[in-house]
Picture 1 (cartoon, protein in one colour):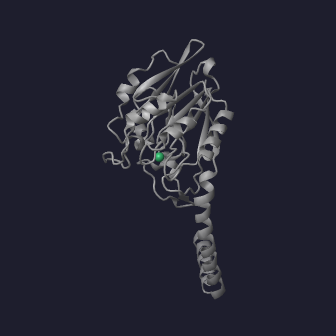
Picture 2 (cartoon, rainbow, N blue to C red):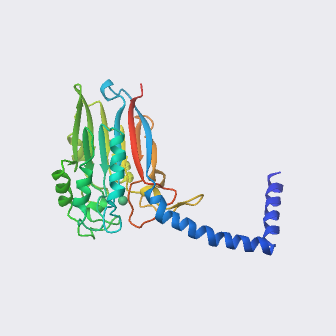
Picture 3 (cartoon, rainbow, N blue to C red):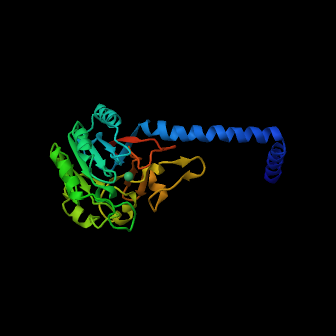
Length: 306
Ligand SMILES: [Fe+2]
């Protein structure tokens, strides 16, 4: 039956293909659609910020952290090809409207060098949250490709200092403890996975054992494979830009991660211990084009799973 149906469809397409008018229409269609898609990907989608609302069930989450709201942004790539103050100020207004308890910044702030970094950190200082914590991404160390040394003139210590000057703490293989009503949430921040600064052992050593939940900030979602044996509930990543340019059925043009499944969205990476990974699609870009991968602000609400 299935074969017959398949044959009928093939025959239908063959007949269409033999009609000159149809071939002409298909050619004209492609000539119109391709530039329209290209214009949309270049001028429109990079500005279409989406707020993704996600609830994360955490086992035995204490009352004081129930409905704790984490807003995550990532991959701003602020620099020569992407320095719209208007766009980033709009994003910060959206973040503040979400009334976050914690804002997590998961790396890749600079583009090629640190020339424009001060303008970005000055804008980020306008974020209103109980805590704002950051980690660095590969570009903040000047590293553009996996397995290669730094190629861009970026001093990661300068990036850290610029954030600290604006009152934003950068977790470079260290832990922040967020306290509420005598209960504690660990936020572990790890150096980038493509660099020699990826040191989970050091980062987790500051973790409070008495804490009720642990969130990990790790720029590259591939880092999850090295972290599976560490105690945490939720890891927040970016790096992949969600694929940035994706086509229906074909998927993304290229993604700088080994595990393409983790390039965007929520994943339960350990069913037994209920460990979650969320990969944010980022706000910026290196080359100006986004298709089926809108810039993203993630609003994650922790809820008690028990
Ligand atoms: Fe990035």
